[in-house]
Amino acid sequence: MKRDEITKILLDESEIPKQWYNILADMPNKPGPHISAMTGKPATFEELSQIFPKEVIMQEFAPDRYIDIPNEVREMYKQWRPSPLYRARALEKLLDTPARIYYKYEGVNATGSHKLNTALPQVFYNRNEGIKRIATETGAGQWGSALAMACNRFGIESTIYMVKVSYEQKPYRRSFMQTFGGNVIASPSNLTNCGRSILAADPNCTGSLGIAISEAEEDAATHADTNYALGSVLNHVCMHQTIIGIETKKQLEMVDEYPDIVIACCGGGSNFAGMAFPFVQDIYKGKKLRAIAVEPTACPTLTKGVFAYDYGDTVKVGPITKMYTLGHDFVPAGIHAGGLRYHGDSPLVSQLYHDGTIEAQAYGQKDVFDAAVQFARAEGIVPAPESAHAIKGAIHEALVAKAEGKEKVIVFNLSGHGYFDMASYDRYFSGDIDNLEYSHEAVEESMKHLPKITLD
Ligand SMILES: *Cc1c(COP(=O)(O)O)cnc(C)c1O
Image (cartoon, rainbow, N blue to C red):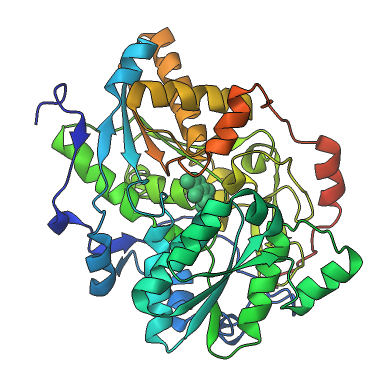
């Protein structure tokens, strides 16, 4: 294939990877163990199995470098995988950069983001272990959409606690989930103790991701036939997403390229992990490249947070993990990239950042929307506001390459499309979007409430 004639690099169905890459096997410093919020001690298999299937718990701590992708899941991946890798030639021209820019497009499945890559295997393992229903939370709606669709594929029920403010603002996301049989509930709800106690204190509470997580976890823990599923952060989720980077490597090989820089946006860390980990594996083998996680300045977990044990949710039900965090009661400003508003980060991504193996950058949302529109006009795809953070990072690096007069190869992950987010674009076009910064004081206050964990 001639590098400078090609726009879209496609692989054959038969080249969908047969295994995921488990970076735990290669990390010189492993992340600290997950701690039970009940006991303050490392979470046991029994505790976790109240809400997760055995196979998923095994994957969470697996020592193996590669884990087989079940055939049934691989068959379903075929509907949209391998996903295309594009050369961003129009964007390169616009920026007048000597850099060659490529992007992997994960918005090509019905739900419009990378999250279906992990929803399918998670539901598959639950179905195999006799689970009849999955309870989960959704903020912006992408994870709920992926989970509803995956449950529909495997013939089990889904209950999705959707943060009330999104439930009201994003009716089409709700209808999408219902199309795939999802039972969508505005959170806080009257269905759980957690929801009832919050409503008793504040009947008009508009909800938060932390509350929705607690409702879903309570639902799963109190029903024997029901489990919980998480769309980011945890090790097994990051591993399922490595299918993105493994495919990208093969696609780049087809045009005789290897990246100098790989970039992805970072909320809980799963799409960054998916793109970057297979390249970090090369770093461990001696290759030189930079992997950059891009986050919003309104929720700058890696760039401004601390590396500490913290709760994953506001109501302190789920496991405590060692990660970069802004504090579990830090509430970021209501930016439009809802998927990047998480106070913590994946323990794996956090450890790699702590060790200096990967880098991080933060950008303001106005600058990110500028980049999103520039990209849309050049490349013809409207990006999700989350994914636009990766675009902003790639444009920045392409301009650095231009200033240095260097022919760099930049690859970024376009984690999803923005066709359910046009209301946010609307706000941008009416001049209603600012470069929000985080509040240093709020984070300092939140840091006072970190749990004290002592490991022997
Ligand atoms: C959920 C989401 C993200 C953020 O989650 P990660 O786990 O950090 O990948 C980014 N982009 C899109 C399109 C999403 O739906």
